[in-house]
Amino acid sequence: MATHHLIIFVKNPIPGTVKTRIARTVGAEKATEVYRHLVQYTQQITRSGPWQKAVYYADFINPDDGWNGYSKFQQVGADLGERMVGAFREQFAAGAEKAVIIGSDCLTITEEHLFTAFAALDDVDAVVGPATDGGYYLLGMKQLLTPLFDNMPWSQPELRLLTEQAILQQGLTFERLQELTDIDEWSDYEQATGLEK
Image 1: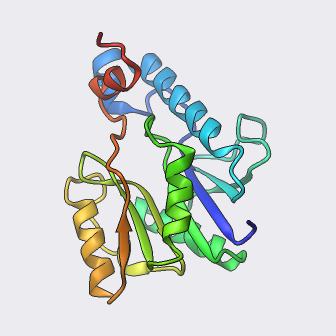
Image 2 (image 1 turned 180 degrees about the vertical axis):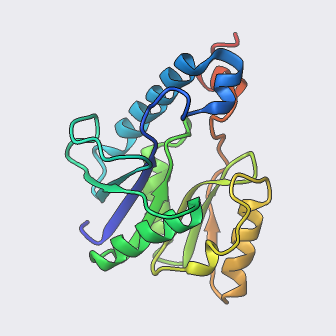
């Protein structure tokens, strides 16, 4: 499905720069280990899907890592919104008719969620995967909707709500997927992996 593009945002697993809230509980090395696990999981659920896959790195493109076989790009922009707009713009320019973006912070997202998101775009203008912290783990659209990224409160609990309002204010429709938990705190990771038992 060459016209269905999956955008994956990743950070380079450098201790001290990833999962900083987890690092406050268990230290930077362990937090980096957690992040590597999240990235490996994201690779696992995206690898066999029939979409064009584009990985966008936060710091630098790693030429030889677990993302080999994916198109590789560098995130560009002052904040998350600018970086996402840039990625969507590139993928639509490259021929995408549907584009879906995910991060690498969720251990409960499955390949099924991705299929559902792309399918939803047959009927609606945008698709939102809500995260329990008030943000979103997935966002999909059929054309670049820049108002979804303008002056948004990144990493704040009202992000998803304001994003959905922005869709409606454009006179567009959206579908909301199942709510999932992003791994931001050590307790999230313990719950997701059963470590707390």
